Image (cartoon, rainbow, N blue to C red; front, side, top):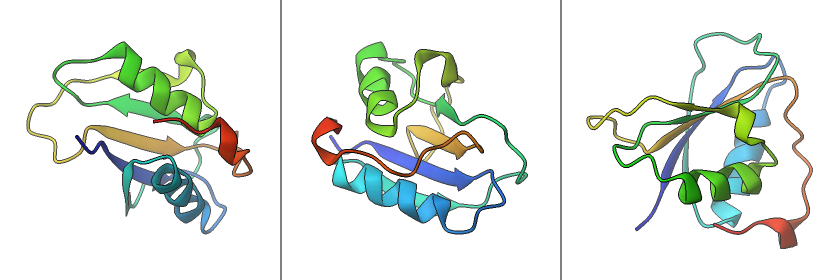
Length: 103
């Protein structure tokens, strides 16, 4: 099953969302871009919209993006067209080691 992630740039840095989407695609996720509600997030957030709230799946996604368990929010939404929303904050590090990515 393909995991769909909506990537939103919550920073003033243009193109950061495209870099994160490329990273997700490289790791085997399906990423799509969408505008963030604002551009001043200090910390990145992963919002889990799945009904099942599988901690193994979300942990893998967090690790792929270099995020911690403290950065996930559970908001189950069975009507969401994506399983996760990733809002990038100013703490997001776009550089990564490809060998560390594992879906």
